[in-house]
Image (cartoon, rainbow, N blue to C red; front, side):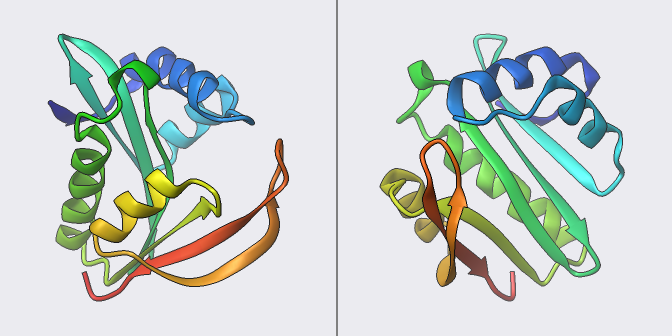
Length: 144
């Protein structure tokens, strides 16, 4: 089940950050984003436990997906797609015209997910990511 998150989810989101990203956001950074009205967080639950989350922010008529994370033990169950769909649908209702995201050039599973959700590569950022150093693919979904 996908739902919009609240402060009660901070600890679960921080744990997913630690499990899923080489450079996780700190709990303080997550809490700050939760407090910012431009950000929106969604979580997916499995048997009452948060096993995935995503966040994005809206600025004017553009949306930026910043994080999509699913617990390693809960992957390949469609949760990433459900989170993406929830964010795109919410953004559409809020008048967002275009959405963007960055993804590691070697993260083929994520790239395939994003493509299947209507995103297309439009550019690259050289050496954008650290640990390991890697380029970012910039993807956009236009006219949502």
